[in-house]
Length: 114
Image (cartoon, rainbow, N blue to C red; front, side):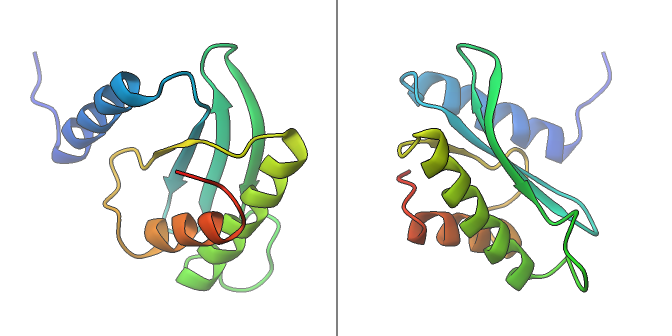
């Protein structure tokens, strides 16, 4: 068996903790790349994506904290339209710092609770 990278081990640890503590709430999943940031709210029981937002359609710089704040507020608005207020934050293997933290803070300010 191949050794897992630090990122993969962290992702497994975070997802295991989420499964234990989710309590049937939808999951706010965040994915970050060098150019973009993506967020989606997933209902794991039904296997459906309830809402999503990303920097794909944004013109200008998309790999900074301001863009992450925009995605956070957009995902909060989309969640309200879908009738979701309580979620569990899934940062994946990413550290809760920088763009991921900015997205989470903006989503909280937009009305999501986690």
